[in-house]
Image (cartoon, rainbow, N blue to C red; front, side, top):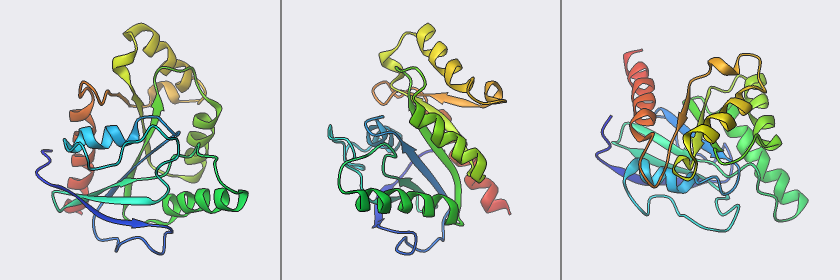
Length: 199
């Protein structure tokens, strides 16, 4: 899958305000500061496709980007963001939940995990919820360039060990700096998009 074009499509504050569900969608989500925006820019090879910020929780909307005019990448807010009033936080998380459970053209959710750390409860809880809710997901371990192979594999194994069949799950390790994992992620999305076209 070669990315020939990548453009911003729309932002939404709720499932109801999302653009028409016409193209296959691939959503990216993770804890705040997991490197999601940098990863999206690396995938598209456009430095300014998604806004990168050092401030946690900068992404507060559901942002849609159209790739090659045939499928969408969706940038979801970080599920660890906790600033703002309790009411705002409820709306924030509700927006994510409604999208993940109600978006009919959603094909895959890429859950981003920081490979530098041992399993974080918020990541484990989100993956457990995804399993229980039937959300199709794949784990992506980010910032691989900042870790030696041995410790990174140990962290990944420790995370997968939280789940009964976790050891058999396909995972992707990637680096926005080196581009590692880019082709594998594009292949997954390309295969999923091709299945939709063949239906």
